Image 1 (cartoon, helix red, strand yellow):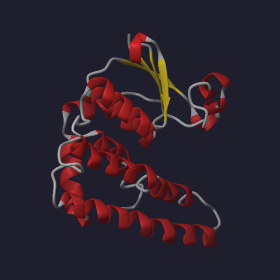
Image 2: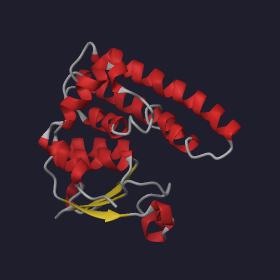
Image 3: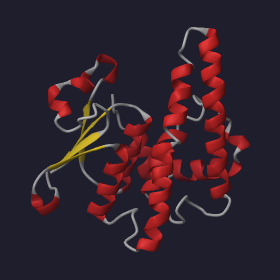
Image 4: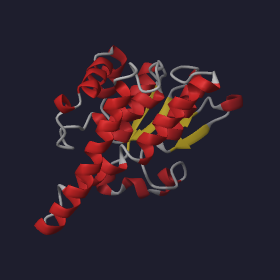
Length: 208
């Protein structure tokens, strides 16, 4: 049975659509229109108590019984465990996957997300302060990623769920007002992953 994928067309939603396609899992998209407040619907809160997309319900969960998972990072780890794909079994190889996944969840998402917010603030003084603060931090994070990718092909060495997590936000680099030409290793990595057929399908599928 297909996984029920509750989402919207956002960076966090795209992380999961890419992972589902790359892992070859069947799924059904259930759009949650966050612009209309559908994330607060009681039925959605049962599977995502923090009223955030994405969330999944896997009818074939552990032991053959359904399971729901919320938070995009947790979903990626669950899907990696379920399929044995893009998540190494060896603990030493897992550690960088965990590190770069947490790096994305804690920084390379929240920080550019603040750029998205302040670009829409009408008050010029408030907008200027917010953009200066968060664009500086966003570019710092792109620099961290660029230096890492100067050493390895993918963030954890081999392609993993951490790459899918980061890709979801790098996809919005133009909205972050970041020119990837300034970060050549990120640019190489980004173009390499975006050229993968399964990743292309993950971005092409309608989420809204």
